[in-house]
Length: 536
Ligand code: HEM
Image (tube, rainbow, N blue to C red):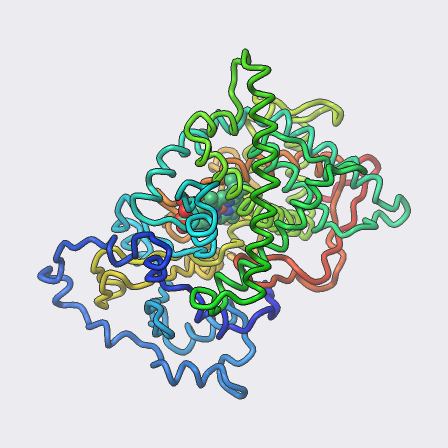
């Protein structure tokens, strides 16, 4: 996989904003949350090499790497990590510059397991501090002191997460959205057909942009119980504004939460524009929620309550925060993942044909509807999704602040240190997945289903910690079920209707911001399935 440079690695590296900023925001600092239990008398700890012996550059040397002519000059985050790994090995430490915690990078799955197993019930993943600032400091009137899942830590985080888990993580509860998500997928395909040139089979619109509209329409239905009309010719003007703000928001957040910025000390004009965007997002989403509340009051005899209604039943402020977090975290992630999976299927026509055979059973009549029953058994589809996210996990590394002293790869790592687990590198390594560069969905199937197609029976690693596209543990992605349902539904519709080819002569490229996002030349050819002879 190729990545292109969007932001220098130096900028991306020195970014993870220190949680001590939490003090300014009136939230707990990560140091207050750490397990105080002494572990340093453990034999394992005492026999381990000291923290100071961890390979890695000191602060000055690291800075010199990023200067013109330096080893890491003009690299993006992924290239930088690869070069540092070549230089220092499978575990190394980067010093925490500008008051930030040190980060230990590890490519050892045993370290991943140890870090996760010791993260406790309140795992710490330092995150997007501007969320907390806006919600807690600027708009306590709306948010009532709730920062949201992405940026809260400790008990404040757990209080929300425990409340919303049953609503968003329970499969059956999420699957009640299938009929509407299927409608949205159908509408997406109709729009795609209207933008498709019947001669060349190419799309006369930007496919990735269209997918962002689909992801927006889907997640806003789940989060706000509202159809925005973004796939129609006449979208709701507020929805169009909200969609524009959401994409600006992602860029702003990258600029102010990920890159180094002085906003905690001085509010620049740019940062104030960001707050204005945030104000607009808040106003539009709360208006949609108020409208939904009125609808629910009129029609309160329904048997099944939708996601928004269930969240409102918990607490209105939690519902507002969650709806906004779902919109913010659920558009670029899902659309980027979809492009990635489709790209792998387009580059592997025999796998695509194999999948289509399954889809023809699921949806014999392309005009029919998907139901709980018809989508129960889709092993090959699910295996294709897993395999696509294995090769390109759109979040290439998982991050935690250690809450205990740990011995990682034989080194003492004191509590309070950042640990970055390089999952994507391992899930692309032949050591853990045979023929790791190849798209082999069969590796995720049980042998009796995979049958003869299974190219390499040992193709799936036995170590669950090297494949974690949605994270792990109590802090795992809360939108996983929703994202999977959306992606499955659209893949069924799209591949039932078209045979998809990848046109560029080069592999799909990615830029790394908060997530990996496909960029550059993204062109697919959409040939109607009728009339295409499947090559097997
Ligand atoms: C394919 C799509 C997606 C991928 C690959 C993805 C991946 C991730 C990952 C890796 C994390 C960090 C987990 C950890 O630290 O252990 C995360 C957190 C999160 N995701 Fe997703 N995500 C996706 C879609 C979504 C969607 C659709 C939503 C909206 C409901 C969402 C909402 C969140 C939230 C709110 C968190 C923070 C959870 C917490 O800290 O408690 N994600 N996601």
